[in-house]
Length: 316
Image (cartoon, rainbow, N blue to C red; front, side, top):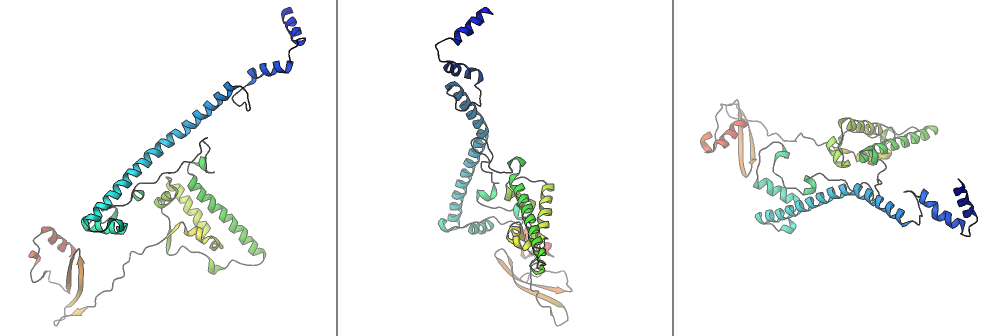
């Protein structure tokens, strides 16, 4: 104890500058990772190393996936362009003016298919239409996310729901302002969903680049329908139409041939220029029929190929 007392007395009466002693001594006990403006080079280096390590861990996985995806798409695009030129040469067309519609026609011609589902037929499309797109980087170099709904796990989807709820709230305020002035919403301007349908779950997933569950898609439909049924929904008609697509009528408009009669009273119909690939034929059907076929004066044996005979019989 006496030795410590003498030490403190010597420090108190020393000619050394006391603030300098404190500045040299105290920070060594109090410096930490959050020390900002420190003049200690060791502490600054440690902080930089830790930040760089965290940043590299956050970005390394993304950069690796992005590099692999970009190189894959570049390879597929190169192969598509080479195949496009070969196909144009096969069809005797200038490759520079060979469009995607020309490619579709050429594929149908070179690879005729009777498969009912178009997805099962041969195709040649740009890689961007065949392979699913990937999201861009969702965070900066420090790991901070760009999107305000990043931590929901599906930011693009929840942004749509947020926009729907925001616009619905704005419409409620607008309707209240009208009613305060004794003005009712114009019923003639009210939107309707006739002739259109909402984006399917698959289309919505392509739009958001996110995998959605059936429950989430149902929530989207409920929310957008509620916005559509609002009396003042016409104010956001363009926004609503972004999530609609017109319904395509599958009912073909066919002008039926007139019914004619033979001398003995049998009814018949003649359809001219019926197409089958490159072949054309005039077909006459009688009622009541006899079950006999007449093809250029011959029966079913007109066709030597068994497959052609089966196709004719299948129509009947």
